[in-house]
Length: 69
Image (cartoon, rainbow, N blue to C red):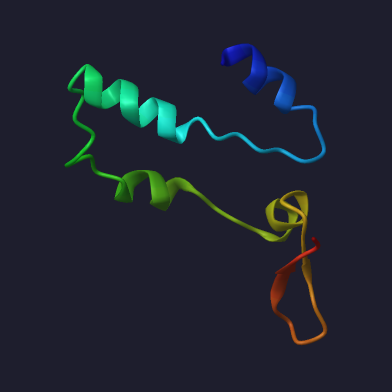
């Protein structure tokens, strides 16, 4: 799984579907992810024009960020 994640990093179309498997593993080992404080992380993220461009978004003529795909 880790090897695939590393190889996928260099691909143009990235499609990782490991969430389902990780959920199964977390449930099997009874790892609880509820109650985690996510607000701190979201406050640290700054998404600017450069970040959106790298995420393959562009500003259209209406001034709205849209996906290039």
